[in-house]
Length: 124
Image (cartoon, rainbow, N blue to C red; front, top):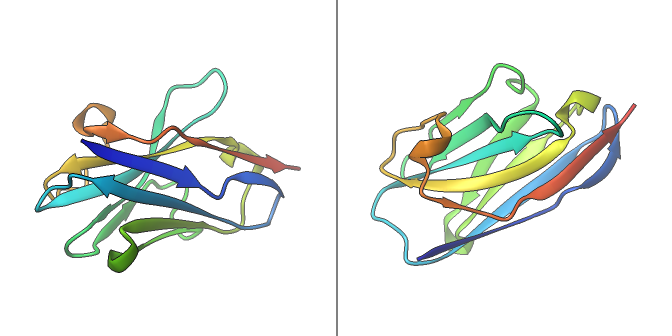
């Protein structure tokens, strides 16, 4: 089993920044990718960004490109999502997820394990 724990959410004003963390524990795979998704009230869960654990390559949704940045700390088994220039429309519950293989999928059903989510609220 793989356990994912997100942290770092909170309330911030528009234009501000937050850094989300996703700590991975338990049995992991030889090759995997980690993705971030978000779900706003009344909306479907959507892809935000993904990173290959082995290569560090990344992929971002157009809505966050240039504002959000993924990084990883191999020693801590943790992925970080740095979110800058936040907008009210970024308000959502943010989830991290892991999938086998290094392909940076944007599809929810291709991810095998999920964290519990962390709330991000951006006030205008």
